[in-house]
Amino acid sequence: MLRKIRNKIDRLKLNLNNKTVLTEAAIGSYAVTAISAALAGAKVYALVRNSKYGTENDVIDYFDSQLNEDHVSHHNLKIVHEFTNEMLNEADIITNSGHVRPIDVGKINKIKSDAIIALMYEAWEFRKSDIDLEKCREKKIKIVATNERHPEIAVFNYLGDMAIKLVLDAGLSLYGNEFILVSNNDFGPYISKTLSKVVKKLGVIDLPKNFEKYDFSNNVKWLTTFPKLEIPHEYFSTEAIILNAYPFDYVWAGSGNEYLFKTEDLQSKLKFPRVLRFAGDINTDDFKKSKIPIYPKQVLSGHMGVIPSEVGLDPIINLQIGSLKCAELAHNKEELIYNGFLIGEYL
Image (cartoon, rainbow, N blue to C red; front, side, top):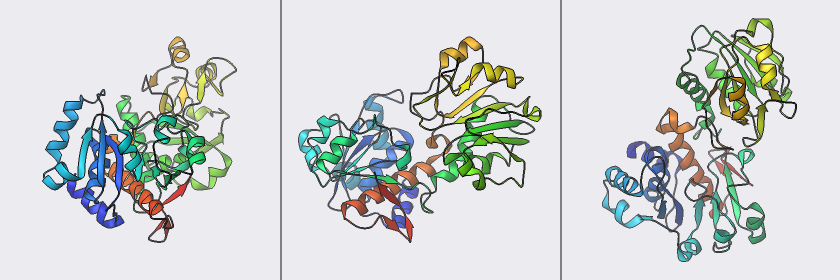
C-alpha cells in the first residue's frame, strides 16, 4: 500500500507541507487518506470510531502495522477520539470522510474561513446530509469536489469492475447471460464499456443525452429512454436489472404508482425479475412482499450498493490523493488544473 501511495503522491506532486488536515482513521482501503496526507507533509488528525469494520483499537493496531516510518506514525499523524475546538480551528483541509461526517453547523462555526472542505467525489454526487452547504457559504468556506475522470484519477474506469463484482456477489454468472442497465447519470456508459465485454447482451435504458456515449458496435442495445421501462421480448429472460439512478437517496422502485419503477411492471415484463442495486434507493419492503430478489438486501440510504474499495486499493488511492490535490490547489488559491486537465471544481 505505501509503495502505491508514494507513487501516486509523486505523480500528482501532492505537497501538503505546513498544512493541517482533519480526516478519518479507518481500516483497509480508507486508511489511505490519513496516511497519504501525512506522507505528503501535512500534520494530520485522524478521527477513529468503532464501526462494523472494527473497533477503535483494531484501527490503531492497523495503522501501526501499516506504518514503518516513525516520523509519519508518531509526528505527522495523530489518531484522535474527538476533534477538539483547537483542531477544528487549526485545520486547513477537512475531508468529508465517513467518521468526519456530518460537517454540520457545530463544526463549521469552529472552522476558519480560509479552510477547504474536500469532497471525495464529483460535485453532482453531493449529498445534503454530508455538509451544511448554506452555513459554509455564509462563512465563505470553500468546498471542492473531485473530477474522478481526470487521467491521473480515473475512478470512473473502475465502475465496470464494480458492476461485475456486484453481479458475482449476487451469485449470478456473467458469461452467456443478458442484463439490463437502467441508468440516468454519468456512470452508465462506463459501466457498459466493461460489462458488455463479459455478458451475452446488455440492454440500456438511459437519458437521451447519454446515447452517444455508449458503444453499440458490440452486444449493447439501446432499449428506451429513462425512466420508461420498455423491455423487448429478447430480454424477457434477462438475468437481472442493474439499477444506477441519481439522486442516490431517492426511492426509485416499489409497489404502486408513486414509484417510477413498479414491482408490478417488473413482474409482468420479466420472466425472472431481479434487481441489482448499483446506486439508488428502493422500497425493500415492497420487493420482499412481491418476492422479487434484490442485491444487496440492505444499503444505507443515499449510498451505493457497491463501492470502489471492493475492487481493490487502486481506485481509492487515486481518488483520495486526487481529492487532497484538489484541496491543496484550492488552499493555495491556484487554478484547479493539473497537467492540463480540470482536476476539481467548487461546489
